Structures are given as C-alpha cells and as structure tokens.
Image (cartoon, helix red, strand yellow):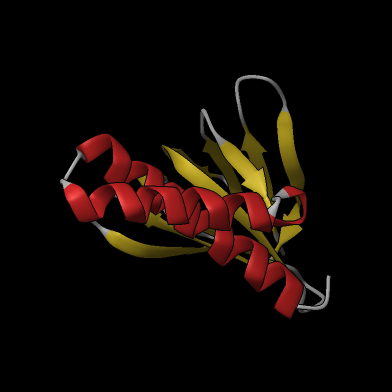
Amino acid sequence: MTLHIEVVSPERILWTGDADRVSARTTGGGEIAFLTGHTPFVGALDIGTVRVHGEDGTEEVIAVHGGFVEVSHDRVTVLSDVAEVASMIDIERARAAAERAETSLRSEHDVEVDAALRRARVRIEAATASVNAGR
C-alpha cells in the first residue's frame, strides 16, 4: 500500500504521485514523516524541503516556503504559495540570492532578508539533493 501525494500551489499542481514515505519540516514541530496508515494530520510548514520517497527507492525533493500539509486516508496534500521541484531550481540564481542576503545581514539584521536567506538555502539544499541523487 502506498501514499498518494500532491504538492499544490495556487497556480497548479507541482507534483503528484505515489510514495512509501513523505517527510517535511513543520513550524514548531520539527521534522515529521508520513507513512501509510498515518492518523489524520494538519500542520503548518516551515521553510524547508518536502522529501517524497518512492517505492522504487527514488527521492523527489521539493523546496517549500511555508504552507500547510494535510494527511488523511493515505493521501498527503502539501499546499504552499511558493514551492519548487528541485529539478526546476536554478541553483546559480539561488546561490546569488543567498550571497546578496548574507552581505545585507552583515551590516544589519533584517527579518525579511533573513527569510530570503532561508529560502535561498532551501532552494540550494533541494537542488543539491537532486543533483546528488543523479537527476
């Protein structure tokens, strides 16, 4: 038995498929994993990666910048205003964004710049994981 996964943004369904396991980072709750038979769950997502572990051993990595995850009846739905499948991330652009944010933070602390840095780092993490997995 598998989980059916959907990662949805306001514009479209970014990723859909079946998997053995899904992991994500929730706000205030840390990392959580969902397997078949998981009790119903709704939680807020932090800036982080959602990792979808396929039946065949593959892993799809998706950068999410907040949102929600809902689990019910072996279905996992990730709702995020901004989410990016690793294979679609421009890693050089993400690195440049991280560099700009780091430079800005050296002179003064700014909450928005700090969030931009976190988003850039998640993009880099997702893209790097995808490249290292041979995609």
